[in-house]
Length: 510
Picture 1 (cartoon, rainbow, N blue to C red):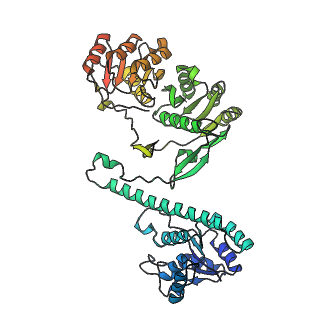
Picture 2: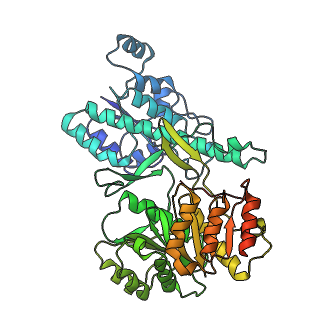
Picture 3: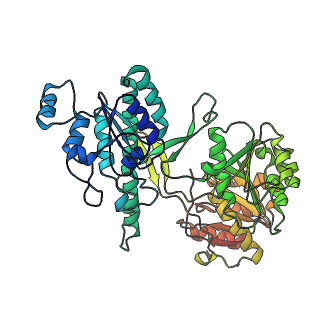
């Protein structure tokens, strides 16, 4: 008679599994709540304490940690030495372990650090040549069916279940490490800057969403999430359009994060990870105006772009949107008529989404590992900035400078953003020198740059970039400062009658 050991936190399906195993002639061993659930279903079950002759102790911290349990799980029936040990110590082999770990991520703390569960799971998974290990209730019925049809689990099934078991225990340990890392961060001690990142980084990811394809159609792609967490993508609802691709997610993430930097009605249009249109309006009902002004920044680039809005989409706005080919529109909501208009566009992906969270780490692959950094927080804090020119910004210029700064931080370096009246009018992105970025932004803006503001993600290394935006009619500049030629650039600004603000903080984005 084969023996199964059942000890689970989540009791879903456990009584049905126990009943099925009993009908197949298995002996069932269990303890605590699992044993009660099985017994209440009318299925015979042996308590672990009866098997080991030792009761649960230390407030249930020690239950299955016993040689009669682990010897039964780890025994190799093909090894004569193992068989002698089993006979000498009266150990019965265990052929199936059904376990479920304490849900540590639900309420992290010492008492939810499972010891006996992971020990049983790892023991069974190690001995997968002879023992099956079940952790997911969705596997109960398929395993029963295989036992009914073949009398035993196939080698392939045992190996698959073992692989899953080690995935689960690795993830469980990673959750505990992360909790301890967070606890360390909460300690009121001086932390060296390098220690803000852990010495060992454990990323446990689960596939959350299959994507239409990668950056190109021949590439397979998926979205993964950190196990035990969820982000705004997990709560987003797609109302219409084709399946999302890798670039749809990548660009929509950029647009959604940027539009949430603004507290007034705003629209962001992103193309190839860079904003090509951004606008904010004072009118609480002006979301349509925000879209129209954002689109006017660079209508050519906006074709096939991502549109993000931080207010509910109205029918009026939906009809404006429907006139332009757009890949994705994302907003906190839509009125009924707007949703009807937009979902009528077969190729438009329409998303409702909650606000984005704050990323913990910024991670990129390199050969043999990862580059890891803290995410870049972009602060708009006038009190931390200083005016370096003889001319002070006007109230209107301050508004445009505060608007242009976070937009510029979202643009690939080298980045120059020209803005006027809370509207981006020219964006220069991803150039190898700042003057070329300025020229691109100026070309996009045309006459709209006159009287506007310029944001630069890093300092002007020479005065030529500032001379270029001044010639285009810009009257206010915001930049980090920090160049050895700052004095030369400040002098140039004074010559042009421009006001210039230093932030003291660079925002490169590659």
